[in-house]
Length: 320
Figure 1 (cartoon, rainbow, N blue to C red):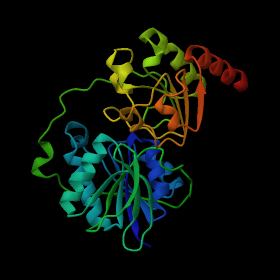
Figure 2: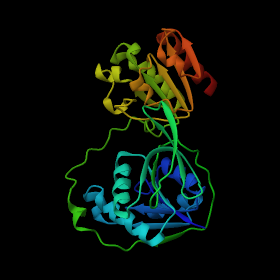
Figure 3: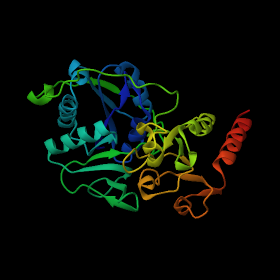
């Protein structure tokens, strides 16, 4: 059977959920071969094998941490040469999209970014994408070379498929451009204890209707009761009520959770572009003509300051 390269997104061997989703999608096309770069392969390998990776190609070098992107492209190109895969799958993070684009140029292939589904095709894997601010859904495939595909988080539910997996060392050399951009410092991101916005299964977002930074605690309390991430509309971010890193929308982050709750958000196209591929959408807004209601699965016409705290208490009561 053909093999499919899957780039492993991890933190010191702790495999992140988007990689497990990619392994699930890769099995539709062929046998997944995971590419693990950096430390922690001993911890990662059993998890990857549990989700169907028949092989784990690994390499660890200081260059992966000391320089940006290019050393990882060198390693992924070496994995591509060794495997000659039917496709290369990567998570749709900012870094991975650059890695994928650079790899596509090197191997003379096309690239598809931000896919929300991948399936086998007659000649090449077929992907589904949400395009033009998520107003349309398209089905696409690469017509030249080996397809390089980046997939949005939450596009598939991770499914286990345990296999016997071998860990193999990648042997390659770094190119002259690998040391072109050096990392000179890092600032750890402050942990909130909540899941990452782009990977969360549930997102609770607040907008202009929250009416102040101090009122975002209502949004946070609901999110915490659900184990959710917190998002914000552009209006709320521009007003300084919540950090830009939490902005959902065309100029912020794109999310596709199982459940998206929008409180006090009117539903401008800028915001809709970042969340309308969510599986289930719930909105709370006191304006019954707000555009967000054209999009939702469930809508509550009411004051968020009354509705959201009641919802939070109900969630807590049901959780016991």
